[in-house]
Length: 451
Ligand code: NDP
Ligand code: 2IT
Image 1: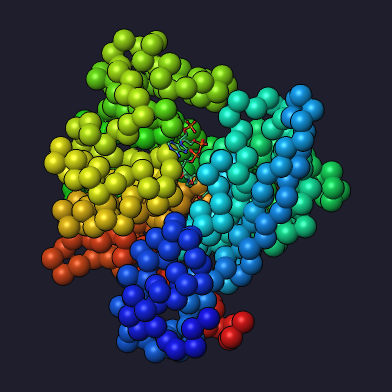
Image 2: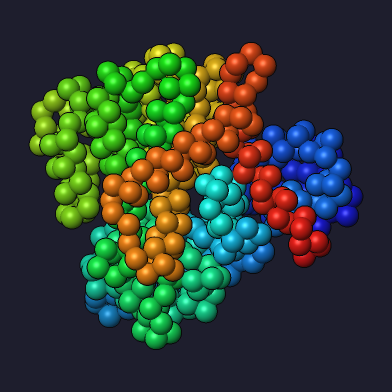
């Protein structure tokens, strides 16, 4: 670890790269934050002397473990599981679990680092963590998924707990997987605690958790538009993904009178010229959530739509864009195409969906750009409210939770706006989110001394 303080971004980043070789997604996430934080702390010697940013970019702990399970044919399978506990300065580690073949240490370290800032922005007492496995749930039977989840939790349980680390869902981990993992946790520990969020309503889950990330990303978009006296109604929207975040973002856009043109999955995207309305969206939810089908089937069923294989939707002319699939799904060229076609605002539902050069394109074009750590914080915020309901042994009604989500997203928007407003009236929400997220964690770390 560097004994000398890094006062410039490149020196700082060289240290990060040397200590974390080959972890390109992690480097990317740290670079995006440090580009705003290092200039900002130049005149704040206490943060500099305490090496706060260096400490935040070094996870408290990275656990990796073997996950063995047997498939339906009796073959033994081996996967690798992880939990990255990045920072618990302001509360227990909190963040999702991702099951996807691309999962590796770099991806989970970037996600846990981002989560630390995101959770701070919510205003709730949650530190940052992330975990998962390189397991591919696609094409697996329910029994195979169950056996995998049980094996995964048989190791994970020793590292988590209601006041230690509280996992939830992410890509490939939804209600089914959370149910299997909670069942195993309860069985091993003989405790019914709030150790996972995103649970079913029958066993300690919260109303509005499924909706929260997608709805929250639309609330953030709406807040950005309102700051310019504009609104969603009548605008066309390109959305990527067709999972939890994408479908609920689409639902809220429809509620607001916008026209959803696209959705996607890893096979390609569908473009419905007439717009995806509530009825078509219900069909998609059934296709993806129940039948676990492919988005290409939409174009077979609805003749107003085309399917574009192995491409992303960013060349479709739209007023607004909400990437909701995965990291690095908007390249610099995609960002240029969006701008050229008149896109005026982007709200990131996925984590780090835009490459750094793409963010630069958006910021240079002075469009409204809501970065993921702010725009998609609604999901983890609702998880925080699930934890409160569990502790209080009561549950709030849907309406109350919807209002709380709206309040939390408005609060995040205000904090980012205040910290990101520039002299000419443009708001750089990226800088705003980085600075506002950093401050609370940094101040808590300062209070603890050198630990
Ligand atoms: P889901 O598993 O429900 O859906 C993921 C969607 O993204 C699917 O349509 C999937 O397509 C697509 N996708 C995943 N990986 C890729 C890839 N490598 N290339 C192309 N498409 C891909 O996940 P979520 O909706 O929960 O998560 C989506 C994003 O939102 C992620 O970045 C996640 O980190 C982020 N997020 C999620 C939160 C939550 O509460 N769930 C909270 C905050 C952020 P396919 O089916 O073909 O794999
Ligand atoms: O990226 C995220 O914020 C999530 N996957 C949700 C985490 C959570 O703990 O609800």
